[in-house]
Image (cartoon, rainbow, N blue to C red; front, side, top):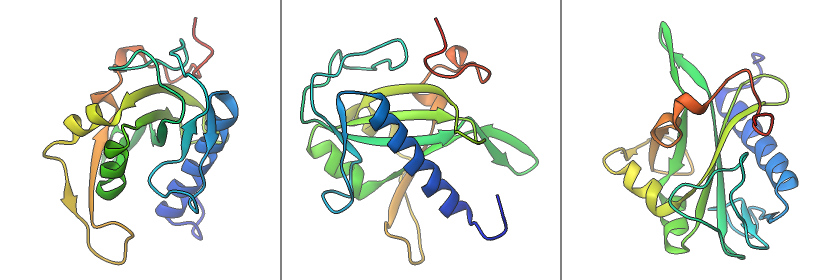
Length: 173
């Protein structure tokens, strides 16, 4: 990361790149811009079914017109002198809207290098994510767009035993 790029800008740019790639790669998704809704990134346009490269947790299909919030996190992140598994960053207000709309999360684990290789994906109902976030919410100060957030390690949703950092999603058989 260059000295001109803050961690927040880098996370935002990575998130935007992942969203664009996923909406292009998954036929049943269409992009939803921030002018339409700031609490989700896409919606289904057709029935979305699980695939080897897109497992579903807690649901067998996703109906058309379902809002989908795309969240990405790095496979590992710095934790002082060592590393820890990456975490999904969830804003409370957006999460509450997704819950109310019976929406889904499309969670993506990636490696922070050019092309942002994806090593794991999962579709998870907002209700299940809500249960996983219980007790994790905290207030943030400053001039941020949100006041209450939570972080969730990807390993709380996706089994680490099934994640191979050397293999991109879709390359596994």
